[in-house]
Length: 87
Length: 187
Image (cartoon, rainbow over all chains, first blue to last red; front, side, top):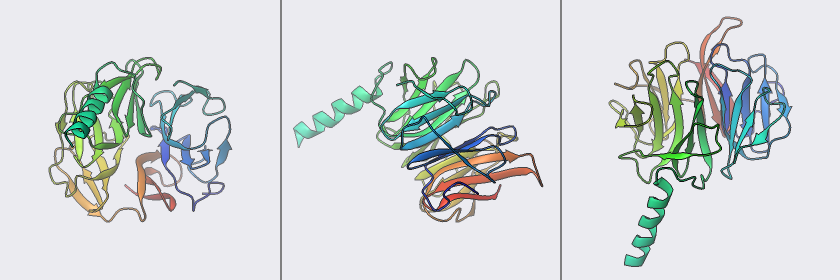
């Protein structure tokens, strides 16, 4: 679990159904992405804190939705590099 | 007391009114149906669906689960596949018509406080459900009947996901997001 702060609470998690790549995990202050089956993790930017839910489109691995504690919804269409707020 | 009851009833009606873009409250779970790009949003205020990628939301009525906090929404994205909603208090509800009608799917589930729900991406009749007080359960028939597996992951579980790992030994693994980090166990 290199990179992911393993002792932190993980509120949200998702993985591409066909092969688990990518995986994303949401902790209190960040969203993390792994492309190697949770061995290493990269912290994603451009998202608000307190993400509480994540979902990958089951047929488009680059399309990811995020929901927050405050009731916001965000969308990335490039596998988490850039995000835009939907509501 | 009578006035208070009226206020609470009015608020519930507002939040669950079809077509209303309500304040969601904390979002607990999201699921995408690739047919028409339908997004399902499980928030503490209820279940919603969107056909325009989240810009507008329509409340989905869940009979028998009014007032219960939703904890998870998962779906079988095959054509005609089922949608499942997990709640803290009413167990699991299942829809086989795209979310129009729902029925309880709790046979064998020893607790109705469900905190996580995961659908096997390779065998989508197989699901796991994590309860707050009775541990982990699984079904092999799409929620027709559940059997207890064990105590489940340690700590407080916030999210449960079955993941198909294609490298190494491969296979389906159950990931849990908990207050002790991300935990992985065999399916």
